[in-house]
View 1 (cartoon, one colour):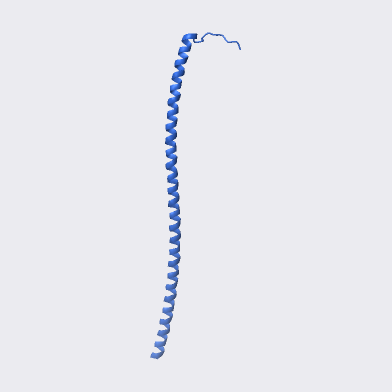
View 2 (cartoon, one colour):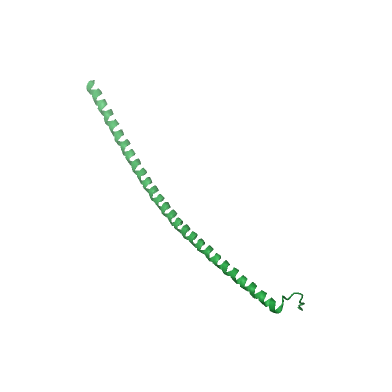
Length: 108
């Protein structure tokens, strides 16, 4: 009877060990899958990071372009103001020679 009990316990131990081995195999497989997923996520995040840096560089270039355009517009406005002042001076001088042209009747 003791021998039979020992055999039954040995069978239970063997079955338990086999179940343990299968559980460990499944655990390892799950960990490998998780490692692959984490690796894929890392690649994805690196791509996102690189893309964000590219957009950042483009935004900096766009900002520099806007600054240059504002400077150019300011210079253009100064030139327009100077030309307007010159034209005003010419008009005043012209009117001093020929009159302002008020009260002139124009036939169409």
